[in-house]
Structure formats: C-alpha cells, structure tokens
Amino acid sequence: MLYHVRMDVNIPLDIDKQKAEEIKATEKAYSQELQKQGKWRHLWRISGQYSNISIFDVENNEELHSILQGLPLYPFMNIEVMPLNRHPSSIRDDDS
Image (cartoon, rainbow, N blue to C red; front, side):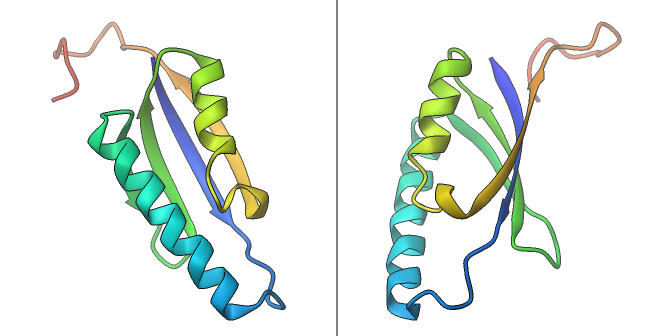
C-alpha cells in the first residue's frame, strides 16, 4: 500500500544540541535504510519548513505505524497520513 505522509518536526529549543545532533544522525541512517529497502519510496523537503512529504510503500497500516513510531524524531513530530489508491483516470499502471 502507498501512503502520503507529512511530517512536521518541532524539536524543543532547550534540548541539548549534541543530543539533538545524535538524534538527527540516527534518524538519517534509519530513513536511508528504509529507502534502500524500498519502503520509504520518496522523501521531499518542504521549502522553508522543518517538514517533509514522504511516500511509503508498505504492507499495511500496522507496518507504517511501526515504521513511524521507530523514527528517532517521532516524539517531536506532528504526522499526517493519507492512504493512496490508483486513480481510474491515470494513464499509467505503475508509479513512473
């Protein structure tokens, strides 16, 4: 299943800077591994915000939920999830 996910990150200003950098490095490694596995299909930054739009390709809601909760920045995120379905007017049978 494909999911459109918007993630808005709000790291507290009073968090230890070194701790914040460690969390971000762990987050980067985690997200890149999911991208290599094909589960995190697209990752787009929203200009001017500490936010992204991502496309996930996972088996079901439970897998997506588990992946999102595994994000090191998860405690600092507002997340919006939208399941996607192929549109009947689409001229493509795939995601090209």
